[in-house]
Structure formats: C-alpha cells, structure tokens
Length: 252
Image 1: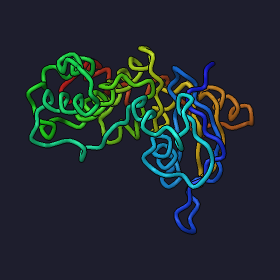
Image 2 (image 1 turned 60 degrees about the horizontal axis):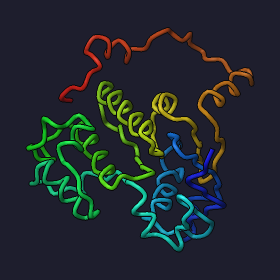
Image 3 (image 1 turned 60 degrees about the vertical axis):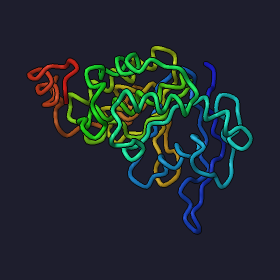
Image 4 (image 1 turned 90 degrees about the vertical axis):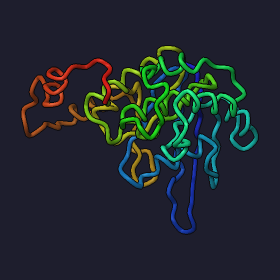
C-alpha cells in the first residue's frame, strides 16, 4: 500500500501545554482513516497541522510526498478541507456558493453536477442558512470536492445529525473513497468509526495509544478476556428507527 500521509514525531505546544506529544503514523492511499479521542486529546490539532492550517512545534509531516514545511501551497491544491458553517456567505444560494468556491480554486465546474453528487440538486436555489443540519453537512462536503482533491479531511462530519442523516452521510463518504480519494476524519461516534474506517488511530492526552483496523482492535480486546456486561442484541434501537422511517435520501 502506498503511503499518502506520513507523520513523524509530531509535537505541538501552546506555551507550557503540550497538546501533541511526539506522535507518528501513516495514512495509506485510498483508505478511510479515523482519528479518535476524547475532547482535548489532540486529534483536531493534529488534523489542522496536516491541513497546513496550524503550525507545528516540531516533527515531520508529508502529504502526498510534499513537506508541510516547504510545500504548503502545493499541498493546499491537493487536499479538500470541510469548512464550518461560518465559512459561507448566508445570502448566496447553493449554486452561487459552488461557483464562488470554484473561482477561488480556479476550477471550472458544473454546480448542478456537484450538488447531485451529494443529493442536493433540488436545493440549488436555496440559501445555505435555509438548509437542515444534514443538508449543510452534505453541502460542506460538496465544496471539498470542487478542486478534485486526492485527500479529504472531515472534522466530526456527523455531529448533531439524526440517525438517518448520519447513515446517509456515511454512504456519501464511502462513495468519495470508492471514487479514488483518501478520507481522513475525526469522530466522537465509535459506531461511525467501526462502520466507516479502514483503520483508526486512538489518541489520548496527546499520545497515540493504539492504531489498527477496527476489527483487529476489537478482537484484541476480546482476546484479553473482556466481556460486555449486557448481552448484545442482533439489532439496536437505531436500526429500528431507520427501518421504520426509511434509509433513502430525505429532506432532513
């Protein structure tokens, strides 16, 4: 497997606080890679350093063979970064926003095609502020695709969404990966990481405490003698909800 992101002995300090404490990991081309950890663990800081949005204190980071110390502008042309809601002009409709971002990237795109990719073609003339939470997240992902990135970064993409919107977004993320992009995401939802990620790195207090596929991490825990206190049912309440309300694209 080809390594597309290489992080070596990465350190980030804020005064006396060491938020990231010498972590190292690789991300392979074409995988969905998850950074997991509690609040304050250092995962978002790590992501922002790789995205060239935050300066590191020390260590090495390479993105598609380019150093974040020497090739920031080239890296920015290679990646797509999910924006937060504050990044959008509230009075522009989705078509206008797509063309605005395309101009910033100096890319020629068909806005309707971009919206179709994320199931929002029927919202083309709607303003961003008029969208539901799930629709806003899908539109945010659409903007990351404008420059045809090799790597897409998603920071907690499904936070605050209902189960239906979350599952729909999972499907979209898989489609993006299946079309050839590498996806790096952070999430607080362990079921999301287990369903989506090919591999995960678990970060705690600035250290990587484990890195592997979800299945291998679970198998290792079970082999250690761990047992759940409650019997696991064959379905969850979330499965019931989805079965009763439908799983297709909906106006969340």
